[in-house]
Figure 1: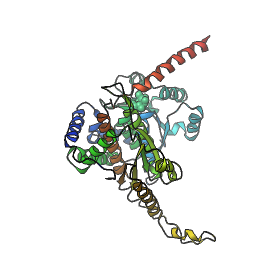
Figure 2 (figure 1 turned 120 degrees about the vertical axis):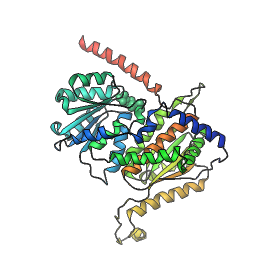
Figure 3 (figure 1 turned 45 degrees about the horizontal axis):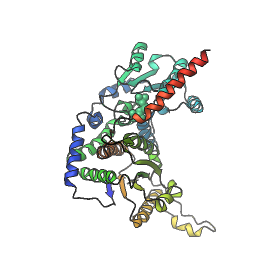
Figure 4 (figure 1 turned 90 degrees about the vertical axis):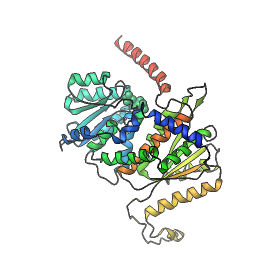
Length: 413
Ligand code: PA5
């Protein structure tokens, strides 16, 4: 992958970059995701080999970090690589959504992956209860959770297969662990290629490759200007990256929106996911003429490996659009993103950068994932937050549990 930065970075911040790099190096001993690219995946692959052909659907029950990563990768690859099984996600308590997914799958041809690090997430367990009442065969389920969680104990009791999250890997940083790798491997994704891509970024950052400088510069800029440019737009020029932007919004939002560790200030950089060219006809106006509070990162695909072409057709009254004739859609979408970038560059006060990934394959998405995880850790260090916790979502959960207790009580009366 390549990353071209169009805003002015301060090359002289040598001491600051050194300190930041050391802080991240130090985190490696306590934060588990850094080493995921070099893990051994034999146990995952051996397990996938035991699956019979009759299983047509892999159904994930999980939410947030337990679902978004696998979904981003699966949806990215789907248009170019026909999955060997369909992957579905129960991520919601919306009854209509539950019914809709159920109407698409035959239970006998489905295997369910119940994924919850804590093992007690309301969304996941409520849907699991619903399905378990219909399908109580323990071999229809695989559980992925923390060792010794209540869900682990339940799975052991019914005799289902359980995988554990590696130590110190948080939900939203878990896509390259069994949480993301197992569902993807079961659908035919080459998970070793995925890890190869992420390892290339890891090596480049930790062993003085070019991404080290780029990532440090970018993080320092975002942190320095986090009150001015407090919104980061990720503008991806491919429909394949739609769910990647959802994953990024969760990673960035839940990791960086916090009260600072050493002050009473609340900070964060608001993530926005955009898809080109669609959002040229929508959000772009706000970027170009709205408040100067946004930085924009464009993601482009270098080679779509697809020759679909606009035919050489002249239409009455539409002759002015003959300029589109014989252009490949690949070139068209690239010209569209380049034109927007050029127009934004003219504004001079909108910080821009471009990420170019080679093609739609496992390696490229593996690179992108690890790149964004690193960037999140770097910015988190600099804006002085605990990147890996999420205390802000706890109070709502406590209130919900109270409401549920009252609901049960009233229901029994
Ligand atoms: O990133 C996180 O930690 C969260 O988004 C969790 O992934 C999410 O809340 C689901 O939690 P769990 O995996 O414990 O069910």
